[in-house]
Length: 79
Image 1 (cartoon, rainbow, N blue to C red):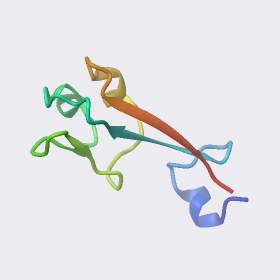
Image 2: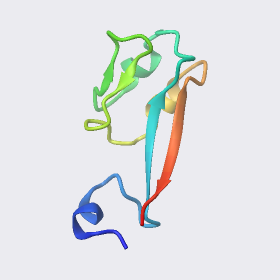
Image 3: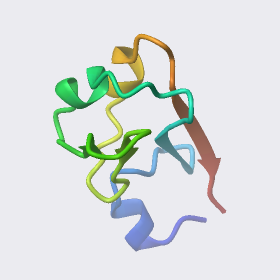
Image 4: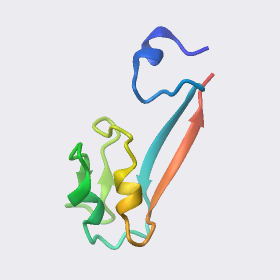
C-alpha cells in the first residue's frame, strides 16, 4: 500500500502508479516543449533538454507538444 506521504503526493494516481516524462536522446532542441510547459520545469540550456522531475506537474503538455516524439512517458507501479 502507498504510505500517507506518498498518497498526499500529487504524482501518485489512485491506482498506485506514478507517471513521469523524460526527454530522450531523440531531442533536437527545438524548444517546443519548453515554450509550452506551464511549470517551467524544462531546462533548455542542455541538449537534449532535461525535465526537472521535482518541478514537473505531470500534465503531459510537453509530451503532446514535441513534434518529433522525443519525450517518453513512463508509468511506474508502486507497492
